[in-house]
Amino acid sequence: MSPRSVALVLLAGLFAGTATAQDAATFVLLGPWDVRVAVAGTTTRTVQIAPPVMLSVVAQKYASVPVFNPKAGGWVKGAQLIGVKAQETTSPNLLDAASFALRAGPEADALLLTPGVDYEIDPSWGTFGRLAEGHIQPDQAVFATYRHAQMRLDSVVLDASGSIVVRQGEPRAAAPAAPVIRPGERNLGNIYLPGFIAKLEPEHLFPVLEQAYPERAMQKTPVVTRLVGRLERGETLRILAWGDSVTDAAYVTDQSTQRWQEQFVARLRQRFPKATIELLTQAWGGRNTGSYLAEPAGSPHNYKETVLAMKPDVVISEFVNDASLRPDQVEERYSKLLADFKGIGAEWIILTPH
Image 1 (spheres, rainbow, N blue to C red):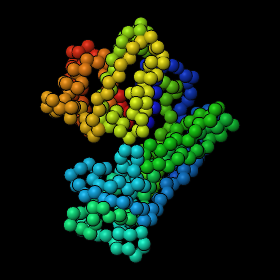
Image 2 (image 1 turned 90 degrees about the vertical axis):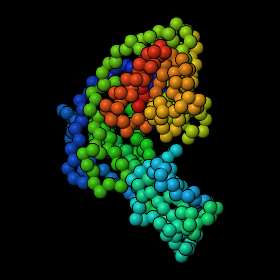
Image 3 (image 1 turned 180 degrees about the vertical axis):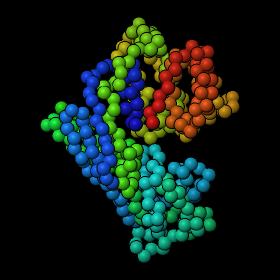
């Protein structure tokens, strides 16, 4: 999800409206790439989804290659193959590992380098690095040849004439772009191709099941009522954005305007011009809430000193890296955080952009 999308999700949560109810469509697999789509009381059609394609890359140049680090996360063990690289990281399971070859030159007969001797590669993440005792020198260019897939998101659309059609999305290494739904059309659901798959499975089908957007009319919670009241009265509101690399957003070109928290606060200032809104950011890429709690006093990421001591009125936390926690761990960890935030008089919004 892009920083802009995250900001809009936050706004939608605060200021939700209602929409006209519609009957949900049903998707049923009939074959490897065939899906029967039915809309209650209107029409039924079997559509065919185009299979994913493998892309071939030949002699892709890498000016230098770092030493392979087997202890690092898969996405940072070495150089990232450009074909499977997405914004700040690499997408897993897109590389055809058997197709990978590394040569010392762009020519087809250039020295073929040997895995386990000259370099190592993480086949899932598509990161590779040289071995200290191998033939690759620190400043030596190497050339990679390989095949890889891309992700794709197609939409099944009820067009303005009442026909069911498939619109193919733009393939990408991550966050594939969905097709544009035109005025007068309805998106019945999406088909997600997560890379190279031999056939569609039920888990790739995503009919739109909600009958209205938002799914139900949202009532303002006491937290939202309090926050909106302060903004409408023109009071000062200090917001702390606390998270991992999604919040740090080192991958955007202008952090002062493009990070999700900057866009969210910019929209709040637009909506509540009388209020004074302060924004603080505390973010640590590749870490989770436990990382902050474990940091000693004096650390630039110590939880008590860099989160609680900031005395925010609102904490918006975003930790995709908490996704590995078990339910009981979430209950224990997040109960502690809630108690801590209540202790300093802060409201808490949990943001889950992934």
